[in-house]
Length: 510
Image 1 (cartoon, rainbow, N blue to C red):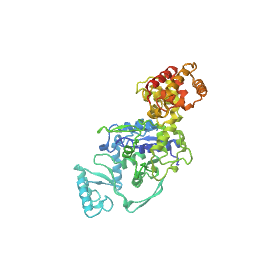
Image 2 (image 1 turned 120 degrees about the vertical axis):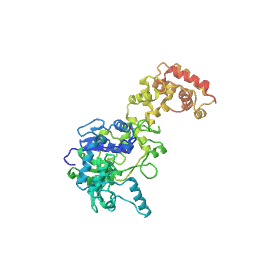
Image 3 (image 1 turned 180 degrees about the horizontal axis):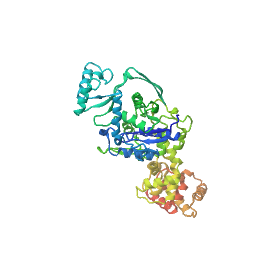
Image 4 (image 1 turned 60 degrees about the vertical axis):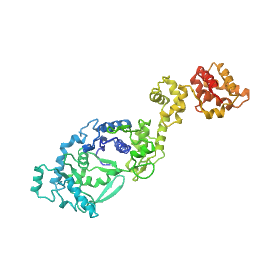
């Protein structure tokens, strides 16, 4: 680490919902900044106005907030190096494009889309691939092939042009990546990328490098798909004379689909039934709704913990980390080079671990807000908390609790057929009637006291416990499920328990 204060940025384009791969990039940047007492910036790279999607920027900011990724500077909070939206920085990029032209590192290109299409078609007919590079640029419609006067006339006449980088010929670039080590590129294999477009906006490459320099970014941590852009970005730093201020680069491995090969996509989530976005997203054009982890009932801590382990490992057996613990443990040295396969079942496992560590009160409040309220059920909150605490170790999500505790809030009106077949015999109603009489005589209806009295009665009758307890559970719960039976009736109370026994005896038929 050099002496400069660590400054990293997450720089998404507002072209749609933020993929979980993007959230992981933001997370790794954030953890790196926190580990080194640095700054985490959010920059919105909206240079491609044709792909801009309304609402996408707000979605990005809300996603990071839900995840607990705090922005130190950026489009939503401001800062001394703003503005942090590239569209608001538009006027200054022209100056840097001109600087590259003046130094001979870039040139004007007037080729129309039609001219380039014709050249590509001609190459295809000759079984060749057209590349705009050192081998072709001297013969195309640009300032390298035209006279200075012709160039000025075209500009004066208002002809559309782009500014392209003049890639050096035959230079071997040996570059260092913080994750991949030494990577080598030959400049002759690279094309002359467009840096500045005819609409007056820079491309990603120019704006990215200029902004990183002006915002004093020390480390560029981004996805593997940007690795091929690394030589151009390094050469731009060199061309501007900023070599000493060049950031260190780290390219993160891909998140791979759970089944088959390739990068995880929305289609994989649709097909296999899991979200690939942090929050739910509605497409404004098609009204198609894409599911989100938040709406799917995942805790943000579980989502973040899962993402951290996609490509990174702490080198220990520990799997559950708070954000603070992740910040302390994180290092680029422990980020792998190869892709990391996403496992939706492991993600559920993480959610269950966090659910079990939350207090009964937290889970109870969530259950009341998310489930009971929607069903129009108004229940005593302390009871709700206790009920949720009894079964929370059996579920992955708060939403799944209802199937385990519904009988606490709604008396059963139907009874599980398999349980009836297994445990409700011809002599059962008489036993249940006798059990009801025993329970009616119990004044202290606490779990321990009721259990002791009922057990004494069963022992005295010299019958198996299952012969009484199975139909008892069926009558009160409606099925052969639930926690300790006497805990259940303590919560329901004597009056409700008696009513359920009466209803079962009237309605269960064999």
